[in-house]
Image 1 (spheres, rainbow, N blue to C red):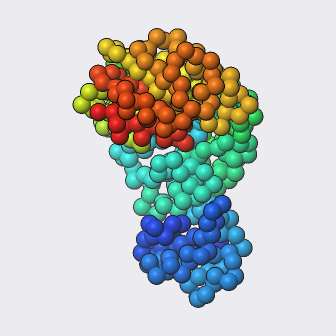
Image 2 (cartoon, rainbow, N blue to C red; image 1 turned 180 degrees about the horizontal axis):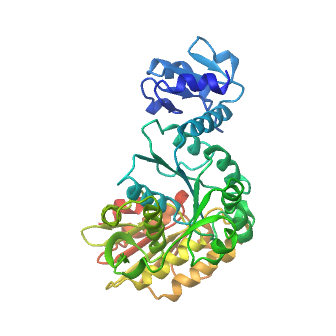
Image 3 (cartoon, rainbow, N blue to C red; image 1 turned 45 degrees about the horizontal axis):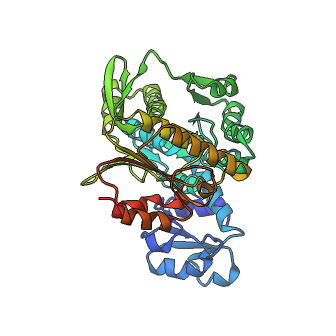
Length: 419
């Protein structure tokens, strides 16, 4: 079945699903494959659960007329998403960067949704599957789209741009993330800048943080909208970011001065799309982070900063620096391994170990195989279970606690026994 014919079926309900556990009535089920599963085997089940059609790429699973056979299910999903994007005829903002992508995307969405019917990437669905699903979640009522694009190797952003074809772009920053796949910091800059290449080639617009020299240099030939430091000014972090927008103070629910740039980006983009100053203020002040991203959690005895969604050398550094500035009677740091750092893993973990130790926090704990081999006189735990066993015997009480590590470490489990 070709893309145009498939689109005629899709636009009856504007629904697609890839998981029978969350199937919706009248949806089109795309039978994707993974390392440990074959979605083709679930095609008939999807129909029984309410799907109108199922798309498969193995002939033996086409058992009735509502099961549609294509050469490659993933490729069909991606082509359908791009075809749909062309029909939408709405502005789409493409967003990438090493750190802060998801928080910035959420901020942009809450600001723009004050004036427009928006659709933004859900959670962290920002890859070769998530981007198509985001586009296909938009319908004729959608007025503006915000698409987060993640990458861990060269040419990935380039490919995602061909699917979502953004009219506007923003790169949060260039940091030490996914060094293994990109081959170093220069590789990160080159890979993320593929968004700039697309915007330039297609005469689109980029949002620029003028305090970032890499952004300024890399995007100098593109039509740009810059952060205006006269309009957006940092006031303080205590512990939440407070700033001024056109002389009106805004009190956010985000910790860390690094979030000032994320907020400034959302304000700049909102202003460009003519969201009122009052609405922008209301949006920023109403946003509360979730999903283990710089969440402040108050328990009976402790105040916890939970930042266990992601970690790389750049984000670790700013998180530690910010935690050092927070006023608290007693501070405890629990750091988990940083993944996808590649050949730089040992020196980067050692550098973070030394940085964390230099702040003289009351207690500092390192957990994971990479941190376990770093040289330090602070407690080290090779596995999460070792840390858990230790903390159960030595409970933390009356502290401010920073918990940060890569997603695979799942350090949020600590919350189960910190009261």
